[in-house]
Image (tube, rainbow, N blue to C red; front, side, top):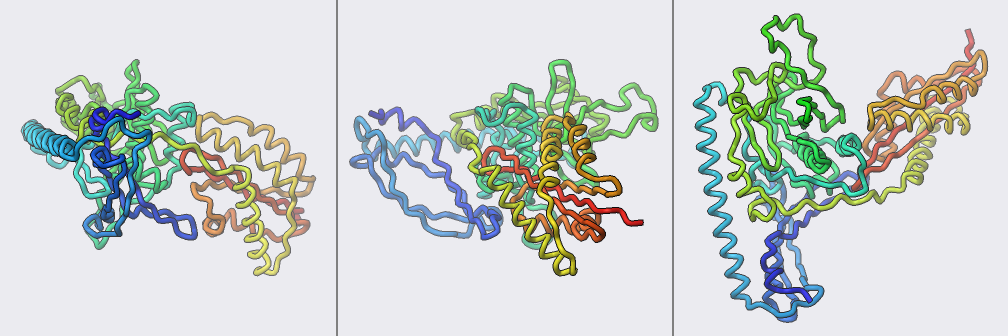
Length: 481
């Protein structure tokens, strides 16, 4: 039997997310709600009925989207029912404690910010982000958006985790009217349920996964080219290596500070990474503001223990509002779910739809279409090789693919192939994108003698419903000079 007093001490709410999916499979976040479930501990027979009003998200967080009727029942049944008075007293006490902790942290954060500005007035323009609004418009310390997250057996390596985060869709928070970027950091459950989010959502998830793999990882807040605000991830190796991880692409960049010896910058090679400035770094336990004379990433020294370069926040202050069990922090991250997508079936379906779309398109141009199944099959190793390279940064298997194609294309014939990568499974949308590429359009609309067409689709599944979709169009034809 469940012990009611033990259950009463569990302060984590139940996080519920409401998602809308349209006929094209596009998802929209409708509502996100934290349910205080402990009223059931004081109800007769361990059963209670609740009515909650769900509010919208982002700019619509004050607008009601509907009423949800909930029936809560405890399994296994409680060994004893608590009085409603005991439950209410506990909840009121927790609310009081939470409010006090939040007040103290706010006082501390203001004091920290004043001290940071006193170092150099120009710090006022640096991107030092201590709080961020979630989908419900609630201000939370940024450290509460990151927690070590273990992927179980669903992802084997940090690089595979980076690939998983990169194939989750990118979508900026919607803005109504002008005035720049709408600020909205999503809680992890809302981000995973939507299957897409902004760069901050990707960076928070990747940082959480890398922490789960035992790396020292931080989210970096700064700007990229043209001064656009951006977030990415950094890991600090035990040998002092600083590695940047771009969560939207899966690319990794080693950071070597330029000009540390006073030599002119003109002699230094231009850095490969796209980041321009950095204002602060944080994870679940630490928050550090960049207080070096310049906030340019390329000249930045990432010795995070040097307080003359990085101003730390008190770890105890962060723990008071962000540690597991701290009532202000977000509930424990949900475990990742295995993919429910059947890769073979989905690959086949998209391929059949693309064949149909190509045939219709060519018919409109007055061209016949002859498919060659064997040539289509020969494209598979190339697609597998591309995905392997995206995950591991190692290229493999290309020699066999090229050899097979040479054998399949007779003398006097020309072969053309065009690979392309998507993170969605909508064949019509993918086809429209492919036609915008002149090289791909040339293959699809190929004219000539003995034209044979091929298309191969390979879907690689990742946790949740994330997937990488590789498509390759190819044609061979007799070269007529």
